[in-house]
Image (cartoon, rainbow, N blue to C red; front, side, top):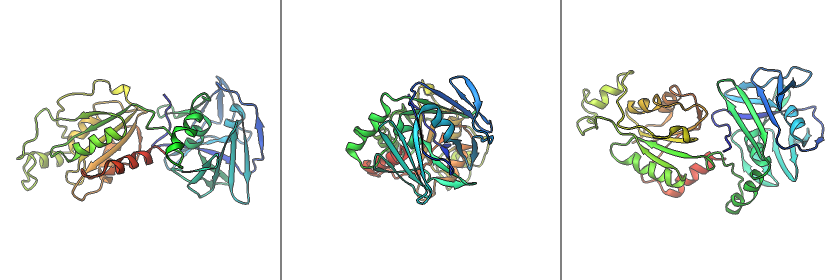
Length: 337
């Protein structure tokens, strides 16, 4: 199952001095690069990325790698139009166009919206690779522990997926980062609002659902926020509070994408969510928080969750329990682009 970059958006460094080039396609190649390492591994053989000592780097939580070293070893063509600041990449019969400072890219002349627009940094043009990888049929993996990027050519299915079923429904090309993965929707709900939102997400994302339940259930008195000494208030005021959970997810390692839902309590997630986050290893998984609330936003709770798990985080959203299923689907599709 292919996994693509989420919280860390992998981008490609395209040299401004780069002229058109062409190489014979070689499927099956495995390319490995490491942050701050000037060498590239090609099928286990190490060599310099270029004569200038270029290295992959992380800038503002985004990882950038040099495209020349990648393309030279998997085959492909690239042109740079300096007047329009547009890069044209071709691989086999497919073509991708991206323009600096524009979030609109083109796959075989079909428009698509990017997570981040190409930009010029220190005289070099940075191109987002998630869209490129999906379009050209590459598989990409990010290992946060070793800080390595592994890219391999898989030309049998990916391009077909992108140009058939997806395009029949929309003129926007969408990647399958979320829809190809096994999805879990885990949620905590006392009043039913978050539960209703979670059920809609599970249905739209074709995912499994897991209710996070306290071993000692919350009573109405526990949730009486007007009482400073109620259980909910005491827990929220105690940084070390970790309410025990009744049961566990049987096969957490089998899930790639996990939606985590909860109500907002005093501007943050309930402490039982912290218990859940600390109960599993989320390394290399994609996590997406969602919340329900009477008015508070999700940002503070997102920061709390991110401090508890090293994972590929996507931006969360505050939802209403009465939100239409079509709106939920639209949000999930936006995450998958």
